Amino acid sequence: MGKEENLQVEKSYLTEEEWAKEIGISLRELQLILKRGKRAKEKMIQANLRLVVAVSKKYQGKGLEFMDLVSEGNLGLIRAVEKFEYDKGYKFSTYAYYWIRQALVRAIFDKGRTIRLPVHINEEISKLKKVQLEIRQKYGRSATVKELSESLEISPEKIRVLRAVNNPMLSLDQKVLGDEENSTLLSFLADPNGDLQKFLDNLGNKELVEQCLCGLKPQEQIVLREYYLETPSLTLNEIGKKMNLSRERVRHIKNNALDKLKQVIVTEKNDESEIMSVNFESITPEKSLKFKSRLKGSLKVETQEKVKFEQQMVTETLRVKEAEKTSITSAKVEHDSLNLASKIIRKSPKKSSKTKSNVKDNSESSQSKVKKKSSAKSKPKTTLSKAQQRELKKQLNQLSYQK
Image (cartoon, rainbow, N blue to C red; front, top):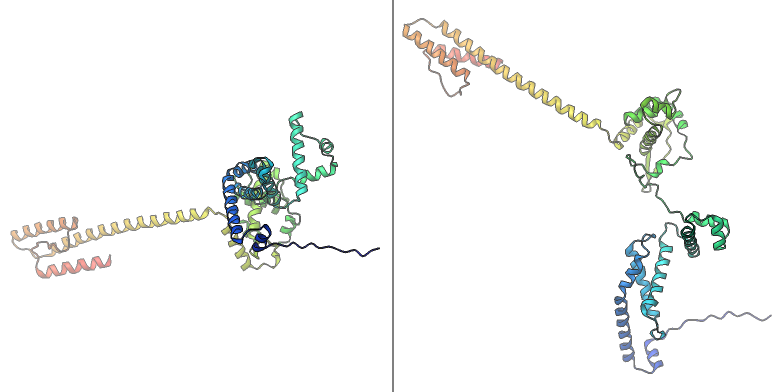
């Protein structure tokens, strides 16, 4: 046996000087030729950009955005310009179409899925779709596994694998259409590790459970209490009959209430929100109050608006009562001042008839002025003596101060 030798061929690239010497031209002439060739390449690419757009439109909705398809198609166009040979007698558009389509298909296979599939698997899936379409158009029904296996010469097991692999990827945070509560797909998946009944049994503290439920809507509280906490617990049908609701509606209310409780028991770790298991036996009253506040904060509680409205009503009522009280007090002060003035006038010494008539006129004028709430600057004309006037003013001041 002879000695085996591995021959390694190293790629050698010529410099511009060696290249010019090899073809028998000067370096300056070579550089001019290369510059003209580069300019011609750019011009040819720009002239065929619309072809890329036309081909990219045929591959929309297959995993990539339209602008991403155009970018990948431009790479295929550049490759076509580099490989095109004009002396073969074919149009450039015919030749470039193949390279553009190849670039688009490879990009969709490599980047169009969340989990990348090998190229040969994608090609088999494409053949599978094509055969399914032909059978549907020919017979008006879906193709069976046996028919697909015979047409593609593939085992039935592999047909099933290809069908399963071709299923679209869905996000668990995707909203469910037609749902008023904006539920996600995650809310309809069962927790394989969770047993809510054991979870509630391990609590051992019904007061804490009540604190957790107090932030929910009344309808949700009733469903959870009847289904989990009451002894014996009721079924969904029994709860529905009791609340005049359908079984599915009760199930929907129950799931939404559980989702709201789960959202509270969340811890942030490495910038990700993860639902954590909580040992409620070790929870202190202080922690339970924090839990209750977090639950209330995460829900849209309508009672805040009610409390705000009631506070406004109480404030308005107090303001009206205060205004009524002020008006009653002012009327009473006015009445007392009139009575006091009349008493002082009666006690004054009797003089001539002229004096009596003056006093009577002055008392009437003072009464009319008090009723009209005249300003303090206007001084009523009176025939009282100065001592009587001072006594009247003193009595009025004391009366107003007391009131």
